[in-house]
Image 1 (cartoon, rainbow, N blue to C red):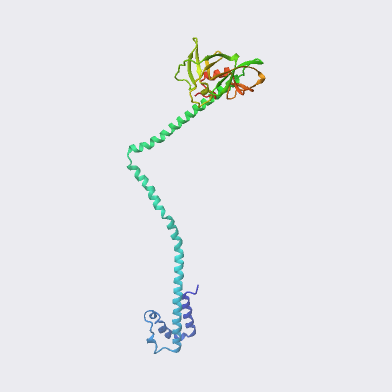
Image 2: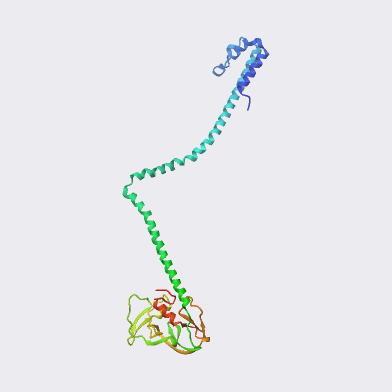
Amino acid sequence: MKQPYADVLNDYFGALLEESPPLEHELAPALEPAPLAKAEPTPAPMAPYAEPDAAARRVALEALLAQVAALKEEETTVLATETLAATEPEAEPQTAVEPEPVVIAAAVVVPVVAPTTVTPTIAAPMAAPMAEPVVAEQVASAIDLELQAQLAAQQVQADQAAAWRNMETEHSFQVLFFEVAGMTFAVPLTHLGGIYQVAKLTSLFGKPHWFAGVQTERDRQIYAVDTARWAMPGHTAEEEYGYLVTLGESNWGLGCHQLKGTALLTRDQVKWRATPGARPWLAGMVKERMCALLHVDALIALLEQGKNIDGQQV
């Protein structure tokens, strides 16, 4: 930055004092018109007694004043620039803070509305949180009951698996083949109770959908099974069976469409099962016929429990 105009004046007047000390009385009238240069620029009154040296000094003084004015204008410009630069950072936070009054106003509205609410409406929100634990407890208890039922079923299956033993037959044994909806089943004659023609069936309420009804035969009640619905969950067609194949000493009889006759098998002709798995009613597969050999005792147990081929109560 250039030298301030105050220092320039001091240097100028110091130089005048050193060059001609006796002319202090002449310098005074030369300096007096300085303030008049702004209001009245004409220096006419000083012409009569101005000496060449004084005129030179006056010209120098005017040049100095012009230089001082330029320095003052430059300093004013610099100060204005610094002031503007100082005020610019302050403007940025103001623009960022502008949204805050809106948010504060929105937050203030909430407590103002609360006292105006009626007491019954305040009780309603309090009831909702109280209902959530009740619903949660109900869901938890329902889940617990379902888990307990699953565990009980698994325990029953485990017990049955532990107690399950496959059928014992002679090395050669006879079986009866019968057909149900295109499926062929085989049952050993040693585990066959009898064969009856289907007559009038009496329906009973509260029984599974595969329960066809009760048939009375010589003072004996036979529980007829709709074998197609029992063996094929989701099967809804009405089947007209011609025979009932009873199982062992039980009252259960499997409905069948056609009797396929008997045959003599050896144990080597059957692929026997070692474990019950998910179908304990299946003793094995007859290799030549590719049909199921029924485990009569396990099948009777499933029917007594109201379970279908998959072990489900439907």
